[in-house]
Length: 217
Image 1 (cartoon, rainbow, N blue to C red):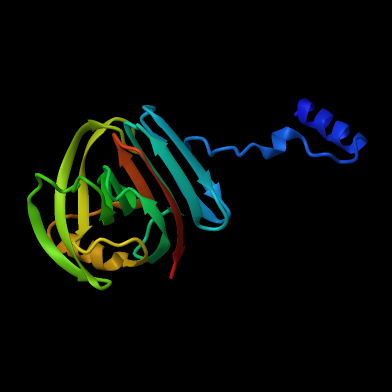
Image 2 (cartoon, rainbow, N blue to C red):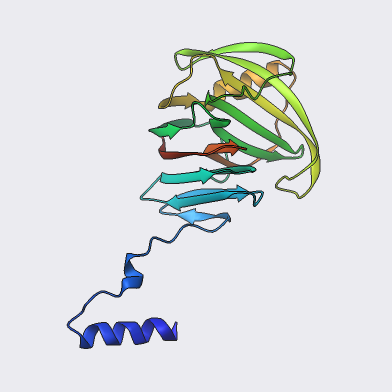
């Protein structure tokens, strides 16, 4: 803070010439928090390079290069059966990346995805389909997978993942979460108490970029 005070004083004495430090764009550090009225989460396993930036209101941008795994985005805490509306650009169609409404619950510990678009790898590969749901102008396939001793909001844990994967990929639109929650429950997939819920970009062993804006309809 002392250095900042000195720079301000020097700039003022020199006719308010901006410091070169003002030209540096600082990325958001990993973790969770609030920004411009929205919750955000940025997690990475530390491999490769990921630069995530919170923007105005529900907007963010992220660029990744040769990553291991990361998940980042903006939304709300707690999650809810809201209508999530989003738009933007996602340069992940030819690499291993997903664009999804992503969230967690506790008791039970559940990680869930409503995948709007995926790239070179379908995240439901190898899983048994439990049904389909018609929602928001498209068809989503429902799956359940299990993660064993993996990172979670409760530390390293074993937990289930619930999936709705859209057949007609898109980048922009509305996602009626109540429809997915109801379909999952009908398939025997029960959520717990909602933790956070974001419009997430995820990358795995890939490089790409995205610029997304999310809001509640």
